[in-house]
Length: 629
Image 1 (cartoon, one colour):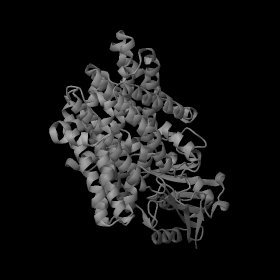
Image 2 (image 1 turned 30 degrees about the horizontal axis):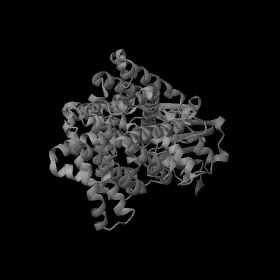
Image 3 (image 1 turned 60 degrees about the vertical axis):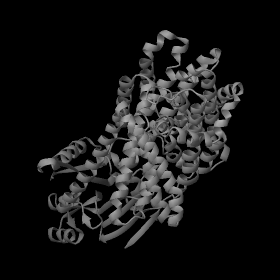
Image 4 (image 1 turned 180 degrees about the vertical axis):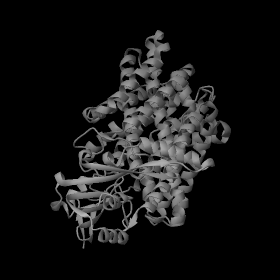
């Protein structure tokens, strides 16, 4: 007998609904903090010793044109127009894109798509370490203009702000989220006004809107332009947030807020900084804060600090989301996830991620000390993520959108060329500190690879210890175990195998619950699923349930059981859960032993199935076994 149960969640039901203006306003407050605060450091970075740009009219206008058209081509054309068409049931982000691409590729190509996806989230995580550091440092550095003696304490102030920010993660962002929008709108209005004020004094800078100035810089100074791309990259940091947060706001509100508010404000601010540098070349060292009238400097520093805190919060929240999704896909160890809101599904915090991020951010601030030095190291992971996104989008365009080859070549080849150019230009930053983020990304990628491969080996070893369904039924018939009142629930890794916890209760304890349920949890390639449970009675009193959940959903087994076709027959007070907790014994030798030992250590300290699947600890029995790998 087979049956299925339709849950209350349907695909696409989480796609935001509401007035466009309100959603666009919310998008400004949540997703544009990073890219919106880049004027604090991006433009002036081009004039430091690493890039060596002069302040003559030709080069300043060429640089401005590069900034403006990078925002147009990368953010507007690539992401708003093309990439954001690739939503996974309304969800965006490189990880969701990679899971979407897996639906369409053949088995032999899956390993390539998975590798690109794993690389992308490793680069994203490494980028998440630098973003809070450079954002807060660049805001605090304005203090030295009004309080010269404070310059030696800027690192301490930045660390104190970051410490408070990370400590506050346990409380969630729901209570303060409603003030993000007004602050960021005020920020964009302020930087636009500063830009307009400077442009009025030197309107010739408006000529930089013409892309010919960028083209002329490329032709006359190709090597300089190539190197400058490392500074221009700083203007698009945070572009992935537009795509990653698409599930929260929707494509149209994000596009509207970008085109109406954010892009014009950024363009005016960069043009204003260019006008200031043309008028006063010495202003290139701190072109943002020198735009600000002296009487408004302190309020602007406060506003900038608030904006960078919001930018940092968005990055941290994004890290929590990616970590949770990667856990559910089995790519990283299970970690404790705290839900900070009883009504909003996406508001979570992952304590171990919070701790590791803070240690990384604190180490970054102490190591680099200034935003200028950080700018010289920033950008490699950003551009690497951009390239990964382009490659995965090609798969989706070809197989889901059914685009012909000529259209894919016409659209994605220029994108890839731009991505490769930016990535190559940022390779020069390795010697200036980008090795730090590369090292973080490489370590994370190795950890993911070690975990997933070793986990597959462990699951294969566990399956060898389990019985197939016919063999188990024969065991029950042969031993005739006693029937225990209530319901016994056992986690099964495969639908055709009986979990060893069930076989153990039958063979060792010589008992079987009068209602025995084997439940297999499957993670779908979509963020949400509609049909969540399938029920099959394999023998009298023995049932098998397949519980499917999206990679953006929590796997709550008690809830799944209550909502299944057997829900009316299950009494929570007489239900006992059985889970396996294995001890990994590494017997391999040579280089193969290294990732297995890492897996064994991570497995030992990972969150158990009881907490991860929401099972009540008071009614859960853990049965251990030793797994030799």
